[in-house]
Every structure is written in C-alpha cells, then in structure tokens.
Length: 378
Image 1 (cartoon, helix red, strand yellow):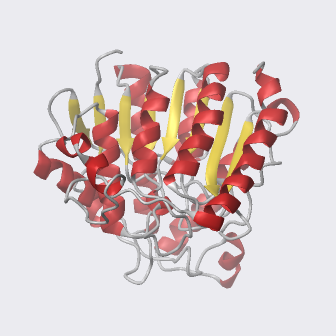
Image 2 (image 1 turned 30 degrees about the vertical axis):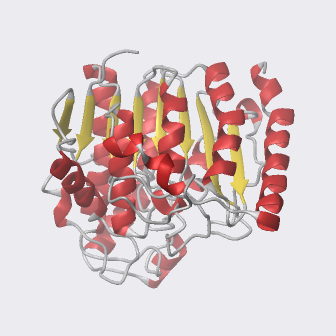
C-alpha cells in the first residue's frame, strides 16, 4: 500500500462563521475534530498536514449553480430577504438566512475544491474537508442546511479533468442534489447509503432510482430502515460497494461520512455507532485510490467530532491503542461503558426487530445485484 500524504482542510477563518444559534447544524464540529486530534497527537506529522481552504469564486460556483441563484444567496446574506426566496428553499428552519451565509458556503465549497487541487496537482491521497458535504443543494435551490453543493462541484472538477469518480455518500440523508446532478452522467458513479426516504428527509433515494440514459446503472441507492445497526450495515456494504468500486475502477473516490448515522443523533433514526464508518473505511482504501473525504451531517456535535477524528485516524492507518481491546468490552462482555477512546461501544439490535431489518435490507441488496451489477459485468 502506498505511503500516505494527507491534508486536513481547515483554518481559523472558517471557524468565524456560524449558523443561527437555534439551528441544529453546527459549523463548530470541524474545529472540535481538530481539537480532539491535536490533543491526541494525531492531527499533523507523519505525512499529515493542515491546509487552509480558499474561497470558491463565482466562476467555480457556476460549474453547478446558476448566476441568478448565486446572486440571491449574496443578496440575502446582506439582509435583503424577499418572500419569493422561500420558493428557493431559503428562510425556513432548515435553510435559515443569516449574515455569513454566502461567505461560509463559499469557503466550505472552496475547501472541497482545494482538496481536488491537492489530489490532482500535488499527489495527496487522503484529503478531509470536514466543513464540506452539502449534498442537498440543487442548481437553483437550497435544502437541508445546504446552500452550495460542494460535492457536485468537486466531482465535476475531477470529471472535467478526465478522472473517473466514485462518489460514495454515507450520510444518513439521501444525497438528492448530488444524484440529480449526475443522474445521466456515467463519468461519476453516485452511491448513497442512507436512512429510508419513508422515514427521513429528503424523502427520496429509493433503490429503484438507478440513473437514466447513459447514466443508467451508475446511480446506486441503498435505503436502510430505522434501527439498522452496524452489523447489518457492514454486511450490506461489503456485499455491494467493493464489487462496484472494483468494476467501475475509479481514479478517485469522493466519500461523504455524515455522522448523523449514529443512534444518538437527534434528527435521524438509525441504530449505528461510529464503528460502522470506521470498519468499512479499509474496504474503500483497499483499492489504493486517492480519497476526498467530506463531512456532511451530524447533529450531535461532540459525537460527530469524535467519529470524524476516528475516521481520520483509520484513513491515516494510525493504530489506536483502544482498538486492541475494544472487543473485550462492547461485544463479548456486553458492557455499555465507553472506554474514553474514539470508538463507541458496540451495540447490536436483536430479536424480531433485527430479523425484520435484515429481511428488508437483504431485499435491497438483491435488487442492486439484479439491476446494477449486470451493467458493470458483475
């Protein structure tokens, strides 16, 4: 496996921006992640470095968003809100209007574009922008705390530079904006593993949404029922995603690791721990492709920051002392005590609920194998 050259995209400047105090989305999570890693000695050194994001220019933002929409974002950021802006998703509880809106969104998107440059031009193979992952924004509409879709912008830059992109979205919410942008584009394989749209915003991401035109078979949705635990999630991921990555043979993986999959998240209904993400990261890294990692959702800030810190360590192949004895607590002894490390204690659903969840997820896996696998010769 090649040596790691990793960048954590962050700066003091991005820490100045905040959503309104009553908004569930907390920009502070990125700084919290840095603080955890710094306190443990895992932030920089050994091939790891911090790189400051640049602010995305209007020209870069127009790779996906319209000039009119961007002008509206700038206007409302000046306090000039109009009732018609509500039709663009602006001004509601999930996309509040505030002074720093455009400045923060542009800088967060610029962080993802900084990451693409580091991969394309400077041979970084791990880049993490915890302030990225705004996968709900559409070309002319905001949604789900997302104003500018940095995921689309990053994937589009990579694809326009001749790279095959596997965009893997593990956020609890379906990446509807990203899906729409590449639904007929085979250069970017979009894969979203998320809580079912029958129980969670944005109420989309059915397994039958597999792309159209030239992109048919290049869009994967795996909806999971409420209560899904690490065990079911890992098994479904292992059976579907690595074979598709291998068959698609991307040049780069864009990976969104929203920590709203956690059972403690107040806005979602899944039953997972941060081990779910940590345990599947090696399945992605085994292909030895550069990975652009983005943050995304996560509405329990402390747990989100700890999960992201754990993911950074796994991606950088840092051996955590707690990994040597985690199994003795959470799994075999049934202990629910957290050992004060980065990993959550394990928790597994049992009984009739586990059987019902397993049956439903097995049906999703079989549908994917029947409809998408043949497109890729699997």
